[in-house]
Image (cartoon, rainbow, N blue to C red; front, side, top):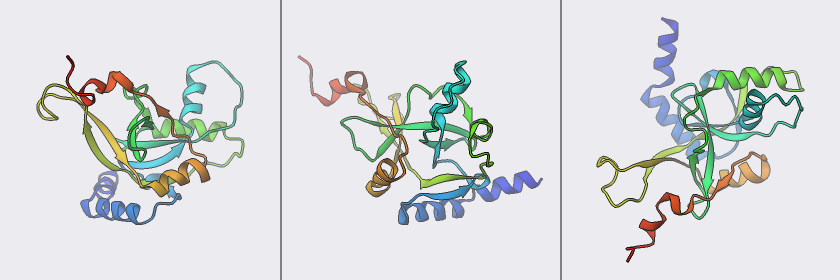
Length: 191
């Protein structure tokens, strides 16, 4: 019963709106207790290091590089990317990892076991709540709701992007989606 009441408090509409307001007003990194994280929260985690360590037999101890990730479905972590030639403050799910279900607890357990500082992580670098939306993938058919696909997108402000990349050194890769991502529709009619 205690878990269900914590769930109800964690996802109350007023708390969610307050978190969004706070995120919009203050765009700086802060530490956030792990138990207070919720959907659409942006956190810095050693995602790529975790993935490499759990999928290869390489025992090489590399420096842990933090990557910006979003929390989804209360427990899963998805790394974010930017699209080249797109709005630079719009962040998308990394298409290489959309089908993977990597839990926050798995990454934290690995990080605590492999961090050279030997301190247990109870807080994470927290960058607020991403402004969630969907962007229709250009197609010849109708938009979302008419069978067309849409990409999920989280928007952040320019100051936060600058801080992530320059001050905090958080990894946020840029990929070129090019022709495979609706370039024909943006270029006009084909003759």
